[in-house]
Amino acid sequence: MSDTNDVTPATPPVKQATDDLPTWVREKLSAANNEAAKYRTERNEYREQATAALNQVTEVTNAKTAAEERAAAAEKELLKYRVALEAGVPGGLIPRLQGSTEEEIRADAAALLEQIGSSIPVKQSATDPSQGKGDGKSAGLSPGAAALFSQLRNL
Image (tube, one colour):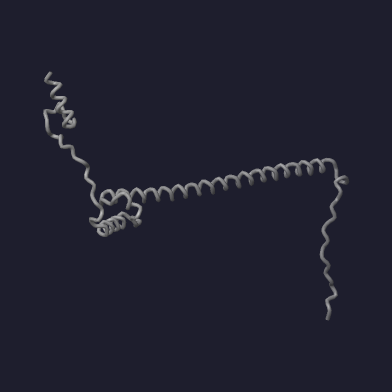
């Protein structure tokens, strides 16, 4: 058995020419179209503003992340120098210190100092033999200058 009712797709309604419509309908339709166009323009402007704001948020977020990373690196470097100073690590070996926590850096500094032992000579500053001698008036003068000063004073 075959189906005798063939269904054909509905055709879209034919657009009626606006000239056939009454004047008041044409005016209302024109006003509605103008208002819709205004809202589309506003929507597009808001969409552009939203996109620009999202781009700014992304830039600020990236800058914040980069600043946090730089701050963390600077804090770690400061911690290395503080631990090295407390442990007595020579300045040239501070960049060699490893670790991410204070305890790890302290352990590495101790191991480094143990490895280098006393192989690095300790520098002593030169002493001034005239320190603590004299009457205080010629303090800080070389021995020859102190003798000249005392002779000039006796004149």
